[in-house]
Length: 175
Image (cartoon, rainbow, N blue to C red; front, side):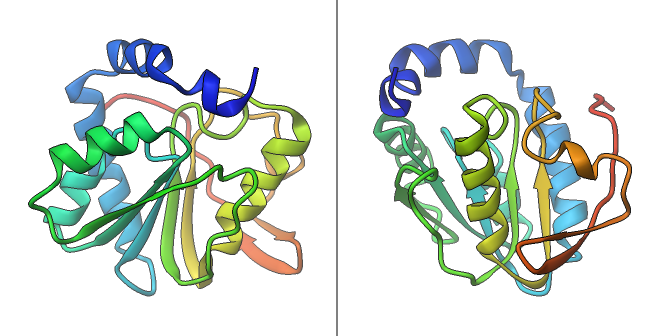
């Protein structure tokens, strides 16, 4: 099954039915606290889906670009955030699209990285990291932590494609 088919309307229905508004609020506050360390206020919501974290982050002062393969997701996000001037969207297959290196921070939550093949996961991981400026911040949450960054799980720093990254591990939990 191709990415565009998998992440279509049936996926949206499944995905939106398991994520509560409370969980979104907790995650948005967490992202806000972490992204304040970013060297600029431009953030990339990598595989943004319906953009559920974008309203809070834009309200607290960030400019957020949401990127996703799913046109329906982008359409719903645009509709919900149509009056918000601090958000924009890119419809693209992020396993094949390199994003320009200009973001102070990027985040990818829930099922975006770690559910595809090892090759696609590695490419998406690389594309996300390459979109971040030096000293930028990345938050990557996955339901499959073994791919593609298994070798980094006990490290404090990592070098990936010639760039050095600080790694902070924290368990997934609701506060």
